[in-house]
Length: 228
Ligand SMILES: Nc1ncnc2c1ncn2[C@@H]1O[C@H](COP(=O)(O)OP(=O)(O)OP(=O)(O)O)[C@@H](O)[C@H]1O
Image 1 (tube, protein in one colour):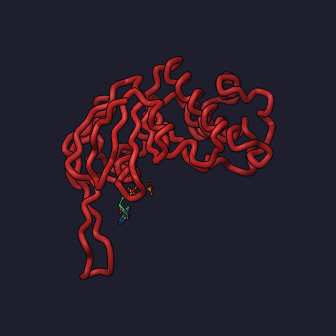
Image 2 (cartoon, protein in one colour):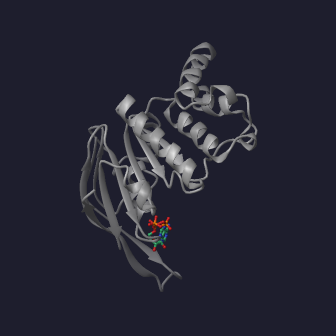
Image 3 (cartoon, protein in one colour):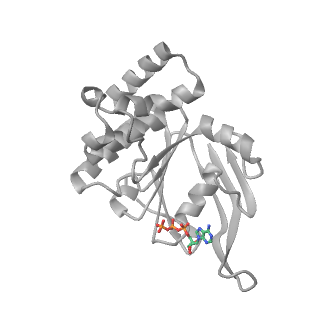
């Protein structure tokens, strides 16, 4: 599903002319299979977000190859990559990133509206997803009328509404209390099983990382597989 080969990236940090070169990804190679949950755990600054950004195509790595769903993406231009991203990835963020002026239902519906899917078809899909994440009773609530866990469920439904095969999650439970965290982790595991979805989760929380089928630890731009 995702093949990463010899990916390296260096940031130039500091004033122009006096920049310091900081290697952030150091010759990373690993693969992620369809239907797998992979977690990448590591301290702040270890390079987790940079790796996720290269997988999603928000930035190109200086060196190396990233093949997603059979297509080389590291060298795609921005427009092609944006289209590819829409079709292949859903995103789950720590802070949910919901539109405050839209209800739960409208937030989930938005990606389909943007894609130009007709209203009747949108309604069927959105209803199905809200049910799947257990939110059918609060679909007319605005984000500020929902708990943190409910907001994350909305954002997960929104990430799934376009049927992407891969979900990229950046600290998906970072804003939640531990009980709600457990609910969201169970939801991720059940969606993974039910829909054969691939999840890449970056986190500094070991409990979150441990729900994965495979766990990698990132340390100063290097990845080491850990026994679970
Ligand atoms: N756009 C950028 N320009 C320069 N340096 C950057 C940039 N983005 C990240 N860095 C540096 O790269 C290193 C890795 O950052 P990254 O955000 O990937 O770490 P992280 O493990 O995701 O951290 P966190 O858990 O705090 O989000 C850090 O030293 C950071 O300062």
